[in-house]
Image (cartoon, rainbow, N blue to C red; front, side):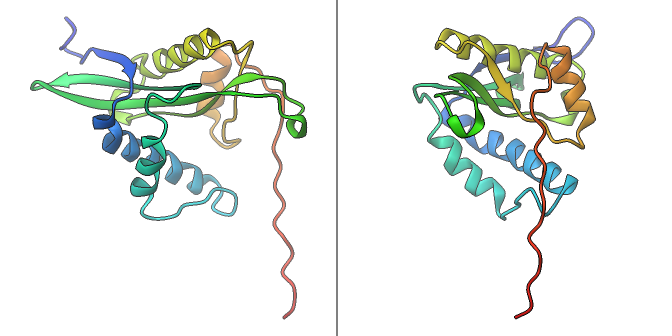
Length: 173
């Protein structure tokens, strides 16, 4: 489908098993982006796509999980152009966090950014998490990803924590 201006229209829907290879490819791009920000903090275990696809397979249709994809139809084929993964989280004393929804991942292919895809994905995940009983939704954004931080602030998220990392000291053998 295309809009009157010639742009692809997209649909946000629950992820299906047939969406997993494309979603895993997007997830791998997200991992590589984070690894590029800080390779000591963010792991990058190749082949990322295979590992992420195995992980995502267990999330499809799982209770307490909001796993959505943004899809455009081209030549009668659904093309996954974005995804979001969130879950209902129980109280966590070590994080001083009560029961909530947590968005773990959101990523949109660069070719369709600035068209509302990420907004629809995140808002869809929030709606699902709230319907599951989440009184609030939390997420983490890479400190160096200022674009993502501004995006989330625009959706009403506020900064509440700052993760800091210190590498271990090398010891003489």
